[in-house]
Length: 143
Image (cartoon, rainbow, N blue to C red; front, side, top):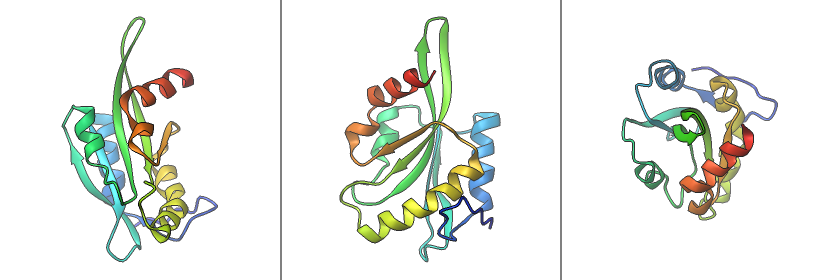
C-alpha cells in the first residue's frame, strides 16, 4: 500500500492494484474504465471494477446513486482532424451519500489523483454532471 500525502490527505493509502490497473489503461488501453472505492475499513483505496465496456452509459450506470466513487475513463471524442482520447479522472460524490462518506472521499481524493498523475477532473454530484455531453463540453474547453 502506498500512502501519498497530497496536503489534505486523510492518511488513506492507495493499493498497488490501483497503480497497476491505471498503467494498464494508460499504456496498454487494456480497460475502458476503472472504478475505485475504499476498502471496508476505509484505510485503503482499491479497484472495485475494471472494464472493457465501451458504452459510456454503462460506465455512468456503474456509479451508485448513494455512494462515493472515483474513476478513470478513457474518454473518446471527435475533433477536427479525427478522434482523440483523454484519460479523465472522475470524483463522484452524489448528494444522497452520507456526510461521513463524502468527507472521507474528499480528503482521500488527492492521494489517488496524485498517484495517477491525471490533470483532467470531472466532479459529479448528480448524473447530469457526468453525462457524456457535459464531460465532452468540459474537455473541449480545456484543449
